[in-house]
Length: 171
Image (cartoon, rainbow, N blue to C red; front, side, top):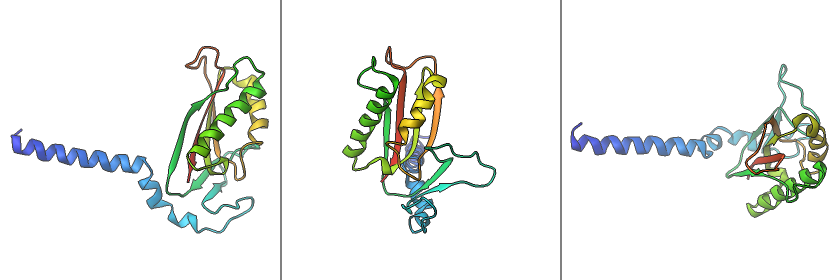
């Protein structure tokens, strides 16, 4: 490769990487969703910027989550996996402590649970603890409930940790 072309090639790659990063950071989302911000609320959706999607043939939502959320906003707040303060507490307390930590991070970012569009939870004892999580999450999350994924895993990064919850919020 000729030295003068090398710099042009590098500049082109940097531009492509920057454009891709912008898309991942929400530029694409913001460009595709502005019409949703002005949409009329339907059913339990009192926030027109956050609309649940329930097309025919999609899995039915359990209490406390939506199969999909169409959201528009100007900022994305991603919260890394959080766990409880007390690993020896009963599971309901651990789940509540974890949601409380998420609430602190949401507030620090200028958001609340109203802004959450997806929750991902990771469980060492999925079948045992998921019913408790389903009950507790309704005390924190609001309709339309965010999309949700629960994953069972043999272990988490911190010894003794049995649950970890991450969230994404749109502001």
